[in-house]
Image (tube, rainbow, N blue to C red):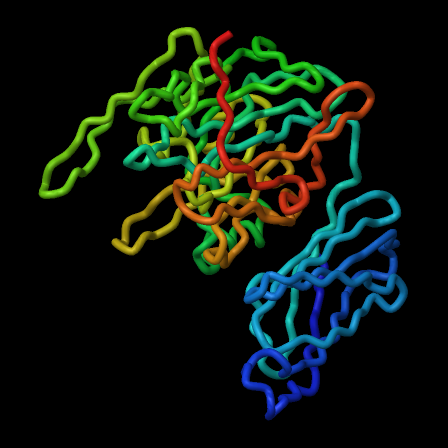
Length: 396
C-alpha cells in the first residue's frame, strides 16, 4: 500500500553574508506533511534527516494528529527517511535519497504500509555477510560467505530457499528496474542460486545458523595470510569452468574447486561467472526468497525485458516483494544514489569503506529466553555493525 508524503520547502533560504561557508548558515524552512488517510491509526511515526555531507542525523517525532513536522535546515543535500508503526503493528516506511535543498520546492515521498505480522512468516534471515573481500597481494573473492540463521521458534527448512542479488546497482540513478519495483512491487534480480533438497532434507533449528561459502576450502595459506578456512561451511557455490579476458586478446581459464563433503547450491541464473557470490563493494544487495512450487515455472511468469546500450534485449527475473524473506542494502560509503531493495525489506544501509578492505557485515545479537537471537528490525543501519576481519569456519 502506497501513501504520498510531501515535504513543502517554503519561502526559500535565508543566507548569512558573513559566513564563508556557502552551505552552512544558509537556512531553509522545511515543512513535512504526510498525506495519510485519517483511517490509518498511528502508534508512532518518526522522520530522520541525514546531511549527505557530514552524515549527521537528526530525528523528529511526527505529530500523530496534524501529521506534520517543521524543520530548519542548512542549504545542502539530504536524505529523508520515515519510519513508524500503526496501532495494529503494521510498519510504516518511506524515504528519499540525495534531495538537494537550495530553494523553495515540493518533495513527494512514497510511504509504504506493511502487512500485519503473522506467526506463519518464515524467520530465515541473513546473519553475518562477508562480501567485501581482502587482498593477499591481489584481489580475493573465493572466501566470500554469508550466514543464514533461523531467528524463529520452530524448525525451518532451507530446501528450495533462494539467494539472489538485485539487478539495480545502488550507485546508479533510477532505472527501469527501480520503476518496475515501484509500479509492480516486484524486485528485478540478476542472479538466482537455490539451496538443494526436496523439501525437508536440510532442517535448521531455532537459533541455529548455516554458513554458505563461495568455495568451502581452507583459503588460509602462507602466501594468503588474510584468507580464512571455510572448509567447514554447510553449503558452497560450484561454478563451471569459464574463460575470462586477461588483456591483449588473451584469456585465462578459471576452474572452481569442489569440496565433495559440502552440498552445492543450484545455479539457476548466474551473474558472477566464478568471480564470487557478491559485489565486493556491496553495489548489488543480497536477498533471500522462497517460492512455493516449481521455481522454473514461476520464473517463466516473472520476466522483465530491458534493452541495453547495444540495443540488445536482456531478460531479468522479478520477485514479488511479499516472497522476500530478508535482504540487506549493502553499499559503499560515498557511492550510494538509489535504493535497490524495497524499503519494507530494509529501510537502512550497511556500508563498507572501499573494495577489498576485509570488512565484515556483522549482524548484532542478544541473548533472550536462553538462546541467541539476531537483531532484526528490517533496518541494517541498526541491525548490523562493520567489523574488521572475516571469521573462519574450519571443518570439525
